[in-house]
Image (cartoon, rainbow, N blue to C red; front, side, top):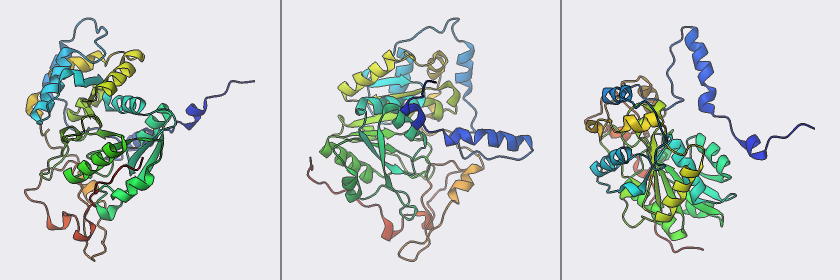
Amino acid sequence: MPPLVSDRGRRMPASPIRKLMPLAEAAKARGVRVYHLNIGQPDLETPEPMRRRLAQAPRIFAYSPSVGTPECLATFVEYYRRLGIPLSADELITTTGGSEAVLFALMACANEGDEVLLVEPFYTNYQAFATMAGLRLRPLTCRGEDGFHLPAREAWEGALTPRTRLVLLCNPNNPTGTVYGPEELQAVAAFCREHGLFLVSDEVYREFVYDGRKLVSALALPGFEENVVVVDSLSKRYSACGIRLGCLATRNRDLYLACLRCRSTTARTSPPGCSRTSASAAPPSWWPPPPVSTRPRASARTRCASPTCSSGKTWRPPWTSWPRASPPTARPADSAPCPSRQPARLAPRPPSR
């Protein structure tokens, strides 16, 4: 009798992002010009100081501290300081890309069989991370006519169950590009605090905002220190996705230690050596914003939709977080949220459990 693959292995979804890659390569081989909308790889050149630092790498890439080297952690601390977010090195854990930070957060915030609230459309690999952690995703649908902003409080309350343990947000959102405003972010954080939930905020596209808006990090919300976990990626920011360097940030000490145990007891006891080496050479002049991409894919995203809302006005969703050749000096009149479709505020409500 042949051995059977585990149920978890059978449930693991194949990545649709990677599934498109061989099709794209085959098209290129036929001479077709391909615009990659399937993978978050910037078209900017990796900064020369980072590449030069790799050429000065040590002869041996030894194991490093599980949290990351002091130089690498200092880079993240300085980055957040420039954003106005004070963090200490013992509130940060370097990870193998932002994806590993998401996985560690899910594993530390919830038990097997618990549930995660999030909005859809969502980053497709969240489903794989949840499956690996033994969790169930409960998506709340966002609508294009609302600019894919967060749903009303009633929707969150209706999705809440005794097994709910956290809310997972991606801000700016992947794939919609929507940037959540400070009021709606504050409201979701209040929902989490009232129900004893964690708020995991995936902010790897933080600087990819080009219409003059300033993204508010969940770490900047006062009074939610015990609830907030932020996932970040230095390699994404510097167009160095291949070095796989991210981080997890939280002021919740117990959760920090749980995530650190996930890091120190896995086979990957420390982030890749080349990542840590190049991180300390990341040019601070890019904090923030990074240079603007000129990739033609931007126009495809900004022309995605132009629905008609209930007021009868034609309105374009605010695709604010994808690169353009040059940022506008003022927001076009038809790109503002339609008055009849303003994102609903989540009014505070006493805990139900």
